[in-house]
Length: 188
Image (cartoon, rainbow, N blue to C red; front, side, top):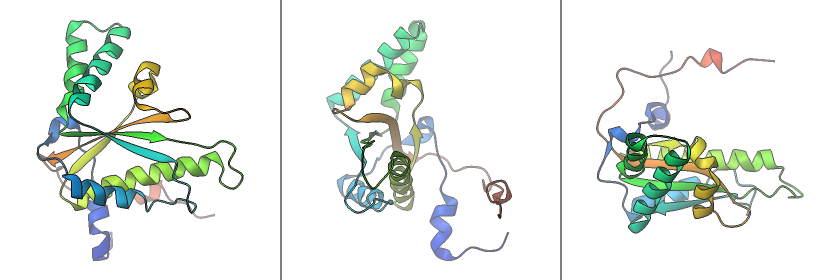
């Protein structure tokens, strides 16, 4: 593979890291603002910003743990499984909920383009975190689709996409985790 321009190095070295490999410190307020500024640079179609981020902090962290535990209980998990879900909600040093506000009737921007913007915002947010020395991972799954959890985060017309878990990485991946670009690129 040919060498890459230096400006691409942060993007090519970014990797997702699960919550068990994250520790304090988490991004501070200024770093979080920089990450949000990067998210706002996602393709946005002028003034349309079809996403919102919510930092789960203070007592809300315990509320998130309660919601995860309730979800596990509703799914029929035993006491150990419920406790594990509760702990999972508290493990990351910082948790940021990602919400989408998709305007299905927008006259200029179809819904799929708005969803692309949401994805671009999360990607930019994670890339900025990486440049600042943090790691993270986007978490979603059935918890993001659970009505009782979505209701806790969403305003009318919003969809809970999931959460970004953030912190300082406790490890780096072994070797280069580059994917084969031939699988993702074709010419027409």
